[in-house]
Length: 258
Image (tube, rainbow, N blue to C red; front, top):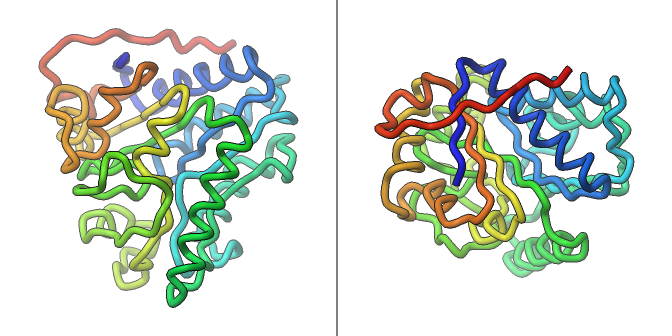
């Protein structure tokens, strides 16, 4: 696991964009695992800029980590809507290669839910697996919607959102927790670990405890992100605030993408 500390959010975004762009230059047919939320927004803005300067996404395949259950793709807070507004419609990504979990699975039909989750896993396998999985991290250490206590070997499935996660995401729902869906469909921790490379980003003091536990704490299901310690090619890029509780010294990554 490589940990790089940047001065601020802007530098995190530039450094992350460098990792993604280098991946695409090395393998234009790369399979990218995509994350949503506030953390990757800067990365996506950088990728749009790089695309305008020639970065090609035409042969790239994407798989999103998760989606809220009950939100149609057209809903402004759905992750389908998020990805198109903040990245997909600004780059030359072929829609045939975009995969986002459906938030409209029938919660009353457990067999269909299971079949759909298996289908999503099969699509990842058929694409050759994820080359680079982009991750954010929750204040409670969750990755995707794998909340504390999630099985470290879990696959794509439905999860109930914790109160702390709802509180973190309330800002996207007019600060009204009651508007946040109760469930989400998410790649499992085992699915994430199958990725050939992981890129985890974190910014702000509210993520400091989670980063401390992820990087220097024991591997535990109570901090799902701590499992990245076991990955052979995990890269963590965090700002000084998110790294403020770390005891050890870590490197800084060059962010010049000009």
